[in-house]
Image (cartoon, rainbow, N blue to C red; front, side, top):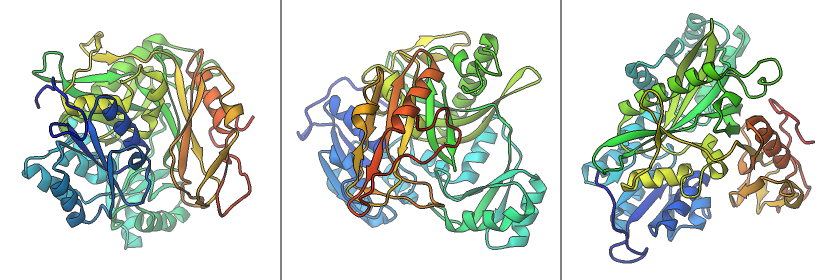
Length: 464
C-alpha cells in the first residue's frame, strides 16, 4: 500500500479509477465521496439505474455471478481499485483479479470470508473474540437439521451459510419451527442454501456495529486501525432498521438506548469498558481479515455480573447499512463512504488517541438513521410527505433513487431511503428520525394508492 499524494481530473489519462461491483445505496455514497476528490468511478450492477450507476462516470449492467462478464469489464476499464460493494458476486474471479495485480479492497479473501458464515465464524474464533455456541448442518436432511438444533438448544437461530442481510435466517423457539427454519435456509438465501449454521441465542443488551477503518498512518508508512464511535442499531427480520451514534457513548452503551433513562440509568464506567472491548474485538477481527478499508463489524454487547461481554457475530468488508448514520453524524468527507475511499486510496485519516492506544474518530453530534421501507410494489416509485418530514430542525431525508419498489409479506421489504436526524442525545435523535421516516408515503406506477410505513416493531413512537 502506497500513500496517495497526486490526483488528476477524472476521465483523463492519469485519473485514479475506481470500479464498483455492486451499485446500491452504499456504493452510491462511495462514488460521491470519490468524485469529491476527483476520482473516476465506474459502477456495475445487475439492474439498470441502480443508485451508484446514477452518479458514476460510466456504468454496466451484468449478472455479477458471471465471471466472464466481470472479467470483460475489468479488461476494458483497467481500474486502479476494485471495490466489491456486495457479496453476491462471483468470488473466485476476485482472487484472479488479485493474482493479475489488481487491488481488490479490502482483499479478495475478506470478501470471500464475509459471504460465507462458516468462514467468518471460524475467523472470528481464530481472532480470539468470544462467540456463542454453534454447529453446522445440511439443509436437505430434516433429521440432521433437527439434531443440530437440539444440540444447541432452544431458542436458537439458523442462518444459511452463504447469504447476507438476514436472508435465509430463522429464529427457532420450539421444535415445530425446525422445518420452517430449514426451508428458509435452503430457499430464501442470497447464495447457496445447501448448508446452515445453527447459533446459540445470546440474550444481549444491545447490538452494535463498529466501523473499523484500516488505513495508512499520517506518515504513510504503516497500516493502523481507526475506530469511529460504536453504532447502536436494531434489526427487524434480520435487516437493519434503525441506527444511532453519539460523542457521549453512555447515552447508548452498554444498554439499549430505549431503556436508558427509563429502567436503566447511565453508567459512564460501564460505557467506557464497553467501548474499549468493542474496539479490541473489532481490531482482532479486522487484523485477521487484513487489507485496507472500512469493515462493518457486527457485535453483541451484554452486561453479565457487572462486567461487559462482547460477542462477535459477523463482519462485512465494506461500509455497512447501519453506518449510514455517519452521513449526518460525521464531518463532511468522513462519513463511512468517505472513510472507505480515503483508506483504499492511500490517504490519511487523522484521529485522536484514547486510553489503551486506540485511535478514535469522533462524531460531531448525537445522530440517528431510520429506514424508509416500501409498502408498495412496482416501478417508478413516488414519495409524499417530504415537506412535513423535513420541517423539523436537524432532520433530513435521503432517497436512494431506486427505480423499483418491492413488498411481500415474508420477504424483507425494499429499503428505498433513510431519515437522518441529530438531537439532544442519541434517544432524541432516534425518535426524530423514526417520526420523519413514518411521515413518508410511497406509491408506484402500478400501485397508485399512497401507502405509509407499516412496521411498528421495536419502535419508540411509530407513525406519530
